[in-house]
Length: 371
Image (cartoon, rainbow, N blue to C red; front, side, top):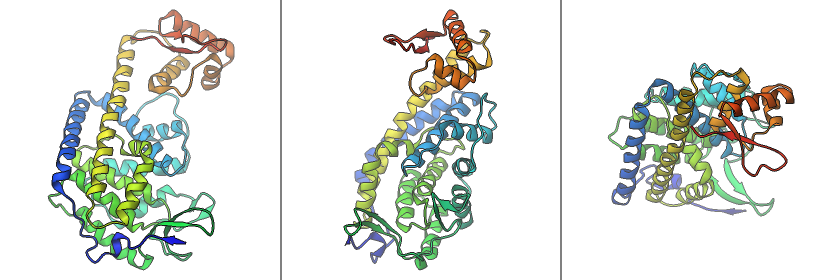
């Protein structure tokens, strides 16, 4: 088995991270500017629209941080779980299972209590919430405590049996408690370190310790989000780092691996982190745009008489319907007959809310009229 060594935690100067400020200052300036512009726009929206933007952002965050680990969650369950916990009165909320609720609870705790100390017990609570049944898939794991390496060292491995490649081997379990105490002391220290840089360092540092048997990636990204939220001085999230990491997943893993096998000079990692964050902030403009379009639509149609099914389906279209909307999908989602679905659609077309999508062919699909 091929092993890449030494890892950065085996260096004599661990964890004295270093970076070149002159190589980061331009990217950091861009990120700071985009953060300021986005927060300014969101604060000008008012409470209701900020809440809608937060719901969209957190839904994306929960979905994508899980997809990075190849776990696919139900978007409607995630949105429903978040909406209930945010106290939002939304039609058509679905029941959500306790695994989804657990991840949502972790993300909200990080966002809404970002200024509270990050402690061992808080991390254990996050971990237990993520694995409410004490299992990761079919396998029983240690939940709400540090790993014990009873089945061997914690490794990130790829390749066929007998030809495995060790991408990373974490510190031995007997060192984890001490390593995490040092990490948590640093996180909670009110040092004069830029919060964006601190978030980038914390993410790499936590992943290098790899303190849990499973869930390290999701908790590591949550810690970074918490520190970014703390730096924004807000209790709401308006951009999703995890959604952008999902897009750049291959480079994300490659950069982490290279950094863990390099030196304590982590300039390259921080350059990647800042670039990814910049892209996440720019992508947040799309979320903001959807929120504003939705707000404009309902203001325009404030006096239009609609039934509950029509409101539900219009909101799904405004939120970004997956695929093409036809009468059969309407009937299935609206839990009604095909005839009722067609009457709903025809009524909305008469009210200039829906129109037929061009080039629909035999299977007619429908889209919203522009306001």
